[in-house]
Image (cartoon, rainbow, N blue to C red):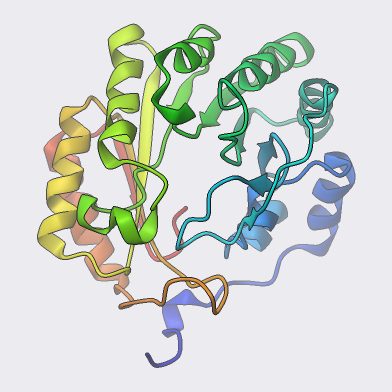
Length: 269
């Protein structure tokens, strides 16, 4: 495939705000860094970051993801407190907490998510919290631990259409992920749910629209649609680059389906 199109160029970050974020994170990993996010400069430059808990090594090896895959290190018992302190120091009004997948843990790390939310509420009670969670191996008990803490938003990305799961997310399951999102609404209708798809890995437009429809029927409130960018040569190649106009068409169709909010664009994450 030819080089990246013009619309995928990103601006250089504000160096002062970039360093300010790094200083207050105090060594905490972010998905911005671990997943080679193209928006790291923009997000750090405006004083935001998505903090990654449970370490920076994933037990799964998805075809699209840049996060390291190996045997994870032991949990840091002080991590929940460190995360809360960093969020307070940064003065975040809205915090996004995500994690690697930890299939080696009995509850997939759900208890740590729970503790992180509690610590943020304790140190910085006015901060709104979004958690971007793994599938916890399909455990309803694990998911219940996160729901019980009532974060404002529970996010779980489907990432791709069902046909491509064996290629893109070989250790995950499309229906398990869909069931997680539906399970949140079943247990607590007041918690907002969110999911995302990355496009350009071989899916068809019809498959994308059908997946969006299924998400809406599962009660998903918010949707993100972004362009897949190959993070390393050993990862899946990009099948095509969708122009901004196509993302806007998909956004409008998703809004018409009933989502509360939709963000769509080549650099949306």
